[in-house]
Image 1 (cartoon, rainbow, N blue to C red):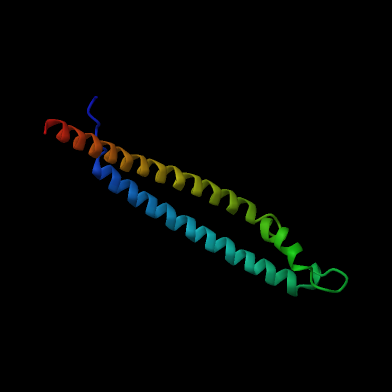
Image 2: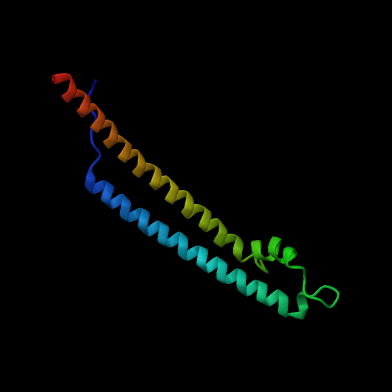
Length: 118
């Protein structure tokens, strides 16, 4: 069997740092979206412009409409950005896991080669 090439550990460290930064960006964007959702709920529950028959709208209606898109669609681009960030983060995590798997394969082959010599 051909020798398995180990991944570069400096590359792995760099990738781990990128994963950390992406994770931070995802969490901050989620926080921004949640804060905006809270403002939207506050607005539609207190502003009579959004009332239906003189009463605030039902919360499940607010939850499935304005909290998803925003009052004027302002949440849609943020949700698209979040989806993109999560996709990139997941790809980087998969690459990192593949590098770890390569190390495990190398470890197994090395152990088998040592056992064959005995």
